[in-house]
Amino acid sequence: MTQKTGGRLLYADVLRIFAAIAVIILHTSSFDWYSTPVSGYEWKIFNVYDSATRWCVPVFLMLSGMLFLNVEKPMPTSRIYLKYIPRILSALVFWGVFYGIYNLIILSVDGYEAFTAADAIDIAKKFIFGPPWYHLWYLYAIIALYILTPVFRVFMAAATRKDIEYLLIVFFLFGLVLPMVKKVLLDIDATYKINFSIIELTGYAGYFFAGFYFAKYDIPKQLKNAIYILGVVSVVWTIAITSNISRASGKPDGYWYGYLLPTTMFTSYALFIAFKDVVGKIDFSEKSQSFILHLSSCTFGIYLVHDVILKLFWRYGFSASAFNPLVSIPLITASCFLISWAIVIVLKKIPLLSRNIL
Image (tube, rainbow, N blue to C red; front, side):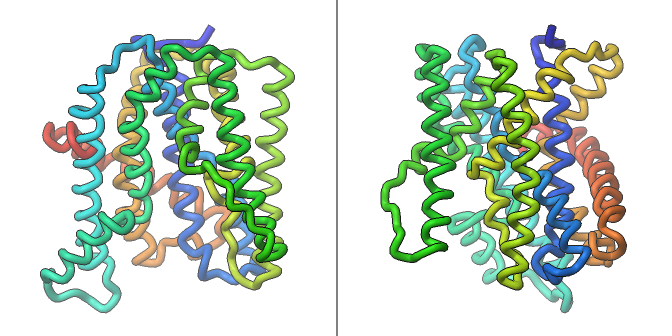
């Protein structure tokens, strides 16, 4: 029996916490990933950590889909457009401006004299032509999915299990496999170009639907075991293929780190199902439940805040390459997570910030 607290599935909250930790591991290991020789010991360790945590963002999307596509719980379109989307937009604006100024003033190696109109225009451009800070791209993806959620919920209200399975097969074949095949063929010969694509209609929405599907339905044991095996194989494959391609080219190649790849999908699915099956059956004490719910409620803020800490660490020499990365990455991750958590707790005490940017 899956444990619930106040209608919430606790395994989802625990998974959300682990995904937030995985994001910090990923970003910690990637800081020196491009500048470290691919033949060196440090880069190999970076590659292992990076490859093993690529499930974090797809799992966040799956957890969102699990909640937003559940038509048994009322969610008027007005609530999505007046509550959820404005909250993400305000977080994007606040943190985008914050990181833009932070980068100019705090992280400037050569020092900084004054914030000018040109700096303001540069920050504004980044909102239009790309995320104002690298990890804020996720907010753009979430906003797009929220905009489509009312349409998705109409489909889900009438959809059978087979309908959703058909959708997931389309996502797998045309959102993940086809783009991968196109890339591999072009690498072999530039004339092997496949023009057909419907990735615009799949993309991250596939993870959104997958989260709902795996939360609602039990998976046959044989299929479940196959997903577990493919998840483990996918991590090993990502480590090996990234290392081989990078060494062959003499520079880091992160193609197989992509979120829209079958390998990342299998790992994400495997983790989601494992948490549902294992963590979902744990009988947590009331204190543990309360702690899990608190920490889970802080994960969005931790995601937004953590790069402030990581960049300061890096600025003052506390980076993954400062000493043995086997030790430095977990140490930096733990330190960053705890500090970010403390900052979020403080910010949440300010009602305006708690409601709009965390």
